[in-house]
Image 1 (cartoon, chains in turn red, green):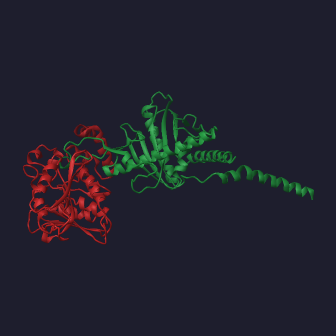
Image 2 (cartoon, rainbow over the protein chains, first blue to last red; image 1 turned 90 degrees about the vertical axis):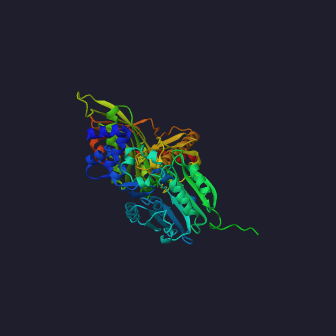
Image 3 (cartoon, rainbow over the protein chains, first blue to last red; image 1 turned 180 degrees about the vertical axis):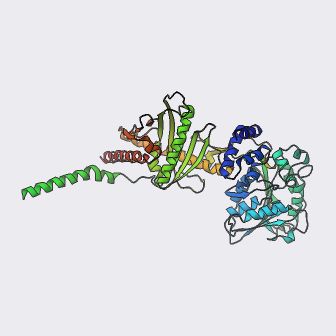
Length: 282
Length: 294
């Protein structure tokens, strides 16, 4: 055991090794030595322990679905505080690239019961299975439906429940440029789904697709809020994409920083009338 | 007839004495403001290296056991065992009504005199553990208590860099540090697996420290106003010595010694000290109340 701890310390640093070892012991899962060996080999701790905290929730984590990040936890909590929906007029939430379902599940947990109906789309059957398992883990009094689908598919929106228009759109789409992907640490590159990470050559492909989807008539409710997580140096590029997509009418755009002071979220509000229309002042 | 009257006079005089010296003063003492408060018990190993750290764990066990015996919940919210055994510091949350009022007498330096388990020559070592007991009110959410602090005065920092962060990194990075800028109080927390959880704990500890500072200040102001010598523990004071060779625990504030140290470490000997301290405190409060009434 001492030997394994020493090896882990070499791999990730002494303080982290001690901390992670404590968490492994605390999890009371059998086979501590095996957990250590897997961690020494580079497997993410969250896959080894099978769960990760996310806000007040405790979510399941399973390879190859993307492990929820603390940056995502931070902005989702902030988004939850930014509005309080009411059960008298429930809102509709669409999460693109839902993965484990962490974003909509946290919002459904924090917002008042029966104030939101959420749907999360993902192209991976593994992700949909995981999101479904997460949605049944603890009672939430808001509906969240994982949906297997491709956000590039023009027919996707017709099949969703709830149907558009959406009051809140969230996404943490794959945003890593291909050349950066190859330089990622092994615990990301060798264990998590590349389809959840790679955003084509410039890392921005999905934002273009999302902007086109948002611009379609009837997708955004009046004054809808849009929150898109971005890579550390992409906030301005993504803001430009949103501003220059034909048919996409947006109000002010904000950039939110994460706890490590990186530009992490492009936050926008839809125009005050439904998209595709014009404001007539008489 | 006269004999009867004399008897009754003595009885009445006695009961009058009791009323004057005990009952009335007790009525003058206002009920404790903090009786509903839970307690945050912070332990720090002092002088003595690894032996102090081992003794810290011994004391930790005593408090957890005592809490359970009293029907309180005890959660160790921070406490990392070092290689070789023992802990450098620990924080225990003791939840339950009366927890703070009872345990606050443990604030101060605890001194142990014993032969360390690792000591080959059988020489007695002296080491210390410093304990601070802070008040915890029942707050479900880490919201600012307007009385105690404003959220905008609290700086929240993460403790390690994450490079590009986000999707690029899946290492668990949950350590946070809070700084209450006006007072300079800082709280670091890293034992939970998420930022959110560590932040909640950190706010809890911050609130407890600020509340403790407020109460200490108010007590000092009251004492200064009264200009008398009544004293309660200042936290660098040595309040108790645990002498293993003589099998004895002594509380220096009230001069109380308990034989059979094991009954303290493993049984409920602690209750005797807590009861004695409470009685001492109540007498002080009564004196205070009576002198204020002048």
